[in-house]
Length: 83
Image (cartoon, rainbow, N blue to C red; front, side, top):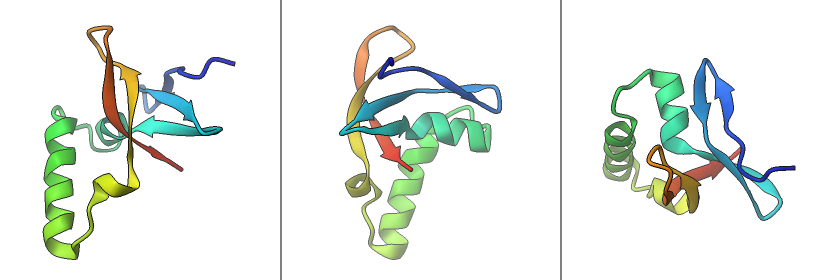
Protein backbone atom coordinates (compact mmCIF):
# COMPACT_ATOMS: atom_id res chain seq x y z
CA UNK A 1 0.00 0.00 0.00
CA UNK A 2 1.29 3.45 -0.85
CA UNK A 3 1.99 5.60 2.17
CA UNK A 4 1.28 8.89 0.38
CA UNK A 5 -1.84 8.80 -1.70
CA UNK A 6 -4.04 11.80 -2.37
CA UNK A 7 -7.68 11.25 -1.54
CA UNK A 8 -10.61 13.37 -2.71
CA UNK A 9 -13.09 15.08 -0.44
CA UNK A 10 -15.73 17.28 -2.05
CA UNK A 11 -13.66 17.19 -5.22
CA UNK A 12 -10.53 18.60 -3.56
CA UNK A 13 -7.36 16.56 -3.19
CA UNK A 14 -6.20 16.00 0.36
CA UNK A 15 -2.62 14.88 0.83
CA UNK A 16 -2.03 12.19 3.40
CA UNK A 17 0.77 10.02 4.72
CA UNK A 18 1.13 7.07 7.06
CA UNK A 19 3.15 8.08 10.12
CA UNK A 20 3.59 5.72 13.08
CA UNK A 21 1.08 3.29 11.55
CA UNK A 22 -1.76 5.82 11.21
CA UNK A 23 -2.99 8.22 8.55
CA UNK A 24 -2.09 11.91 8.88
CA UNK A 25 -3.76 14.51 6.65
CA UNK A 26 -2.66 17.93 5.41
CA UNK A 27 -4.49 20.56 7.45
CA UNK A 28 -4.39 23.21 4.72
CA UNK A 29 -5.94 20.74 2.26
CA UNK A 30 -8.73 19.96 4.73
CA UNK A 31 -9.33 23.66 5.36
CA UNK A 32 -9.53 24.27 1.62
CA UNK A 33 -12.10 21.52 1.17
CA UNK A 34 -14.26 22.56 4.15
CA UNK A 35 -14.15 26.35 3.69
CA UNK A 36 -13.54 26.66 -0.05
CA UNK A 37 -10.93 29.26 0.91
CA UNK A 38 -8.65 30.47 -1.87
CA UNK A 39 -5.90 31.01 0.74
CA UNK A 40 -6.07 28.03 3.12
CA UNK A 41 -2.57 28.73 4.48
CA UNK A 42 -3.59 32.26 5.51
CA UNK A 43 -6.81 30.83 7.01
CA UNK A 44 -4.81 28.24 9.02
CA UNK A 45 -2.31 30.81 10.29
CA UNK A 46 -5.12 33.20 11.34
CA UNK A 47 -6.92 30.33 13.06
CA UNK A 48 -3.78 29.31 15.00
CA UNK A 49 -3.29 32.91 16.13
CA UNK A 50 -6.94 33.37 17.13
CA UNK A 51 -7.12 30.12 19.12
CA UNK A 52 -3.87 30.93 20.92
CA UNK A 53 -5.15 34.40 21.90
CA UNK A 54 -8.64 33.26 22.91
CA UNK A 55 -7.95 29.87 24.47
CA UNK A 56 -4.22 29.85 25.09
CA UNK A 57 -3.86 26.66 23.03
CA UNK A 58 -1.09 26.20 20.49
CA UNK A 59 -2.72 24.22 17.67
CA UNK A 60 0.70 23.44 16.24
CA UNK A 61 1.46 21.29 19.29
CA UNK A 62 -1.29 18.83 18.36
CA UNK A 63 -0.07 18.66 14.78
CA UNK A 64 2.99 17.10 13.21
CA UNK A 65 5.02 18.64 10.44
CA UNK A 66 5.44 15.86 7.91
CA UNK A 67 6.94 16.00 4.44
CA UNK A 68 4.29 15.89 1.74
CA UNK A 69 4.60 16.62 -1.95
CA UNK A 70 3.82 20.26 -2.72
CA UNK A 71 2.21 21.46 -5.97
CA UNK A 72 5.70 22.22 -7.31
CA UNK A 73 6.66 18.55 -6.85
CA UNK A 74 9.05 19.17 -3.96
CA UNK A 75 8.69 17.50 -0.58
CA UNK A 76 7.88 20.16 2.01
CA UNK A 77 7.06 20.05 5.70
CA UNK A 78 3.33 20.49 6.12
CA UNK A 79 1.15 20.74 9.22
CA UNK A 80 -0.73 17.45 9.48
CA UNK A 81 -3.29 16.00 11.86
CA UNK A 82 -4.59 12.52 12.45
CA UNK A 83 -8.20 11.61 13.05
